[in-house]
Image 1: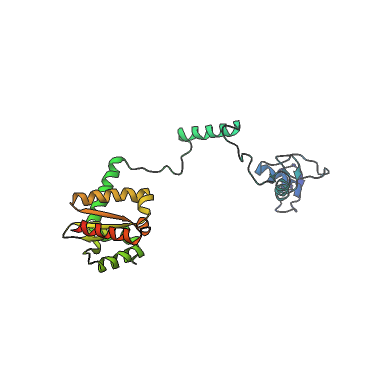
Image 2: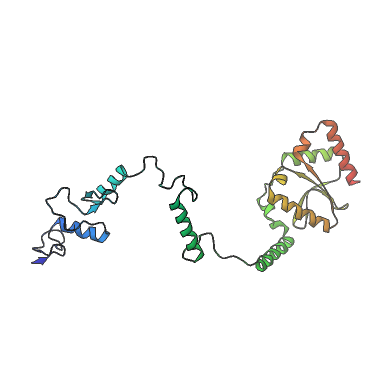
Length: 251
């Protein structure tokens, strides 16, 4: 004879694996393992089982029935979490949770996922210098050239045709060091850039243009920039004046 580990009764081991005397004792054992058990519940009481709802303490025979009950009876009808719309100023519980979280960050119990290894300022400066030296020696590896479309844009094609008709001596896409100029005259050390709106609204491009201008200033180059959006709004008379300015600039 075998001894049931739940009710300590003797049994012949004919039920299931032979460890328990009945389905009831097996459910009680499973409930104890999951810490959601109901101990010593009389089998004659209905409903009987081992799963108890944490909200209303109603008892269920299986975990599936309990979860279906929670979803149907205790979930919020609007689908939002309990703290939806609450802030640290309007809810003491949210404020307490935030304070606990910040404390755990400070004492190292929780490490933010975005905080990894960071380089020192000295290492950053060293890496920046290595990158700039490499691009100076390999201008064909500049990210702008690798990612930029090889097709000629409409503004560039417009000025290519314009310079050809006006006999303006400027070479299209002249490579000078790590930078590529829209139009340039190497002999005179002068260049002309046709700027789209990204050169005025994108902070990264604006900063890059400042470094670019300083680079050519150190090489004793003179540059002229035309904002394409402004040029498009000009009438024929004003456009001719721009062409004369370009000719005077090159002369």
